[in-house]
Length: 119
Image (cartoon, rainbow, N blue to C red; front, side, top):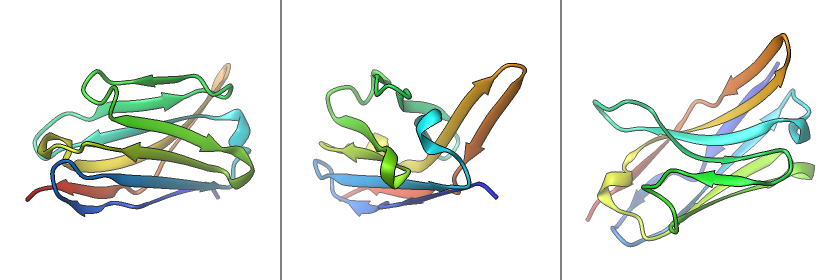
């Protein structure tokens, strides 16, 4: 049974920082690309950051320079360090694991963790 469990969300003031964690079980973590998505109330889901098997990272323009995605394969974990947080960063953040093994696609989601940026 595959599980992705996020943690680290909470309430933070504008300008503050949070570090999200996602720990996977039931998969060979090192062969999955990992990503963080977020969804704010009334808005479409947004891809925040991705990290490949080899460690290459990409970010949404809205978070470049403020967020950092990283992974620890021995711990089967992916992290999202979020600095200089803004109210617009308020959303539920989801961890995603993705592996394409043609013709099969393996894609798994966590349950989400709430991040609220407010004074």
